[in-house]
Amino acid sequence: MRKIIQYLKYVRQEKRFTQAELGRKLGLPQSHISRIEQGLTDPRLSTITDMARLLDQELVLVPRVMLPAVRAVFSAKDVQKPMWQPDEDD
Image (tube, rainbow, N blue to C red; front, side, top):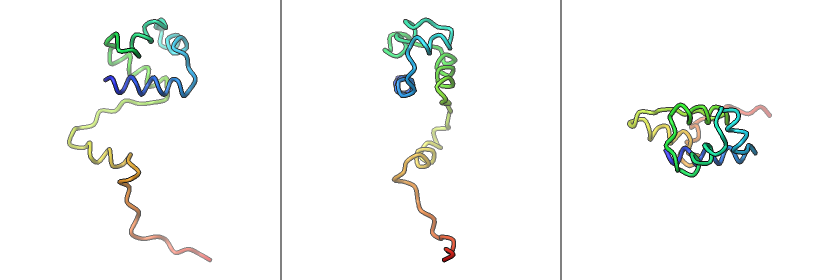
């Protein structure tokens, strides 16, 4: 959960949202957002989901057996180039 929260903090900062702005949109005080980001409170899953969605992110549960395939999709080094290419018109 800690990695998810740290990622959401990173996204919040990239989008230039303050903790107070995010808190207002969530209906939570800035101090609560701060405690979540510092790991001082254990937020509800619904709160984390709402935070993610407000930051244009989505939480997805993946069966453990599928993790290698999912990671490969998102890892540029594991992406294979097609064995064929369409003919180029000159």
